[in-house]
Length: 301
Image (cartoon, rainbow, N blue to C red; front, side):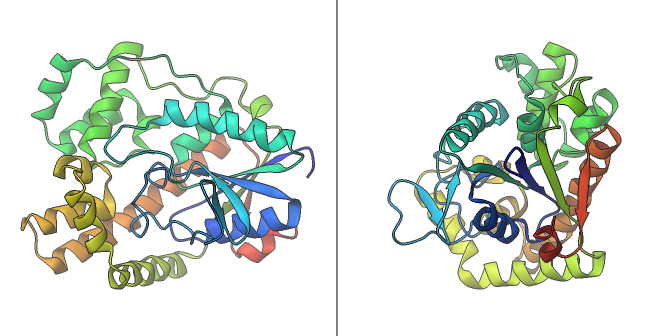
């Protein structure tokens, strides 16, 4: 274990955050969040951030464990996988220099994979002409085009998120496809112990529904209202997907509250399925994955 990095993956609501903290305590580690929304300040309830210790200052600690890449960017500014790969590598190096183990905890598979693989992303400048053309298309049409052009990226993307769909197609137009793992996949994953949580389907769906209702009671709608008051635009809020997209639509009186909840629930189930599909594909590509049904079993590895 002292020669490996740990990567905790799995579908939403499977218990990744708690397991990552338990592993960090057992193996003297620090956590690198690979969540594309937890990097934004003020997006706490909707992204499921772990509680922050009151004793923490500028650094993010939870349950005594330091977390990296949480609350590092403004939701008004773009922070993409290229930024993440750069910052996560820097954090991992810092953790290792201090004699600790990096523990990558991710819900955004594409981000975690970029770190594991060491994928580099050539800069692709915005193509305003192409964006104008693609903006006229529905999310369903954009996802259909992406599926035909790059099935691998389509498997890990939110099919209703037009901003990310357009960006993916923009990159494909420039590079031919979104950068993906290289032929040296096994070599590059050799230093990682990859743990994938995979609870029974019925348990996972119950977890997702219970978690949603708890978040709504905690004030998730008010969180989105506050972000809007702080200057985050409606389109930007919708681009964050899932909870933020549907709550933004509700606050704009485009859908009723019950429809908002039903959509978040349905899309969360679909998201969990996509996350598992991505993991199965990663395994087929050569990665050794330790599948765990009960998080406690991971502590015995």
